[in-house]
Image (tube, rainbow, N blue to C red; front, side):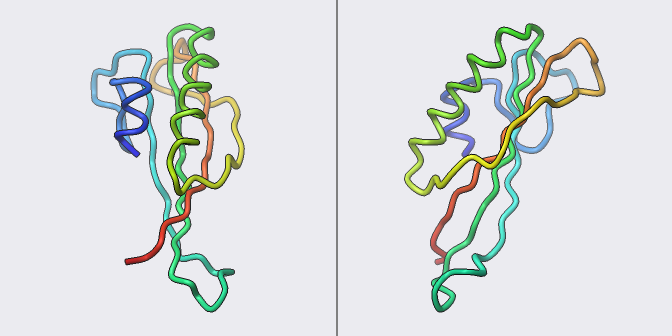
Length: 109
């Protein structure tokens, strides 16, 4: 995931921003769980990838979101987007932010 999102923006971080962040930035996290509704427990895991884009100008957000969507759609195990919306960066209210959630499925090894 880091490779795909870093291709969109080098300033990409897993889980948390650094102490002195620069903008724009992308932060993502991954929540994984076994697929429950797969035929005979087919050995798949479902991963929800939460992506937050942060920028100093509102105009940067949709441009980066389009690139994030395209980068994630290229991942062979990509299934779908499960929502997006506004987010808040509490450390600096002048920073614009939006979130999107994406679902991927991988075979358990």
